[in-house]
Image (cartoon, rainbow, N blue to C red; front, side, top):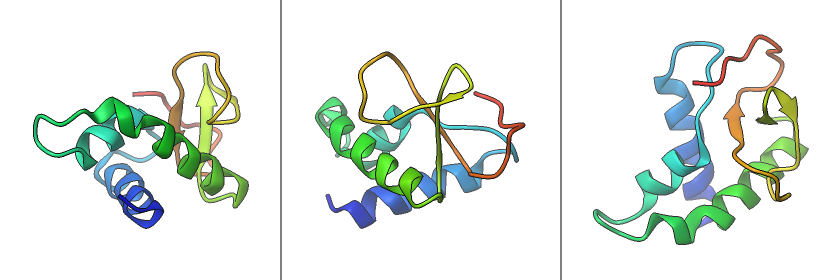
Length: 90
């Protein structure tokens, strides 16, 4: 799986959601894993791509509503579209 695959899946999942909502990185990993595949092994890659997109201001990465580094330890994160402070974690 390439960075382009991960990026495309992130934005595809966000496009399917109501405005101002977020997705979990695990949703991206599960969508990209083969059926019944080990999606958890893809999580570091998904987080790395999410962080790169956040640095380009193309994605918001939050934990508890606060912007964070997607690759930093500390618990679950959410991915949302940038420029929307009203983003709801769903």
